[in-house]
Image 1 (tube, rainbow, N blue to C red):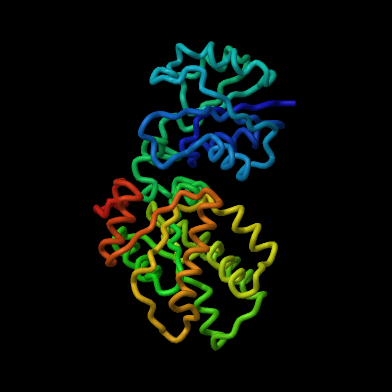
Image 2 (image 1 turned 30 degrees about the vertical axis):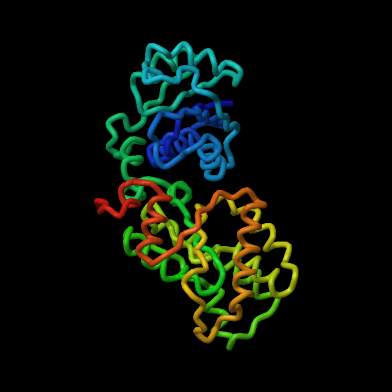
Length: 334
């Protein structure tokens, strides 16, 4: 039985890394991938170890072992071939490997210490002209060099929530135009209008599931940020408001996705406007907003409330997102 090994930080996992893993799987009976936990300062987007392990396990369920390890030499010199003995010794518990796959000829000594044949693929970066540094500099520009699964997880989803008539759709559209990205329209409103303002309990799960699918389809086309006009969480609150309960699947979807978003609550200071579809006015709207805020607090969700004019709200959201190129409103090279 031939065993193969691939190691890396995978920040992010790109086509070059996948070339190594694919070759190992094609040539070996069992393959182990080791992901080193490394947190160099200034890395963007955030790529914690759990996320990087998730990429590998989701894309390659057939691997024998996927192992996350602390980098034993967390320093700029950690990848120096002179440190090969440190890394080889640390991997002893994984057993003997027959082949070690990399794109770096300088890792020959590391392979010898493992007792493995060193298989060097695309050392000149001609098959896959990519590096982690290149991708991190502009994930959107180099998104074709990553699996859609990986790129989608690097995009920041911003949930714009709040009661009726708080300017969520207006703000989502304006932010997307400002940052030259995309936004996700509110499916629930479309269904509500298509059904002549008639709905049912079952509609809420249908709305939430479709809204999430729309996000998942749009995120691979977004430039660093995806603006979401409401979420499944909003639909949950509408179900609770109308019926006092919600479909168990809706609760599960909300619980599973709360951490996927940067949360922005639109303040109830626009003034309620009846556009022919709205149900809440005055005290009802204020009470709905209060319940949403209470729920975010109970879930310990970090959120920001934006208020004022559209331009003021845009500035508040940009401040929340930080000053990454593109997130600051400055042009991004494509």
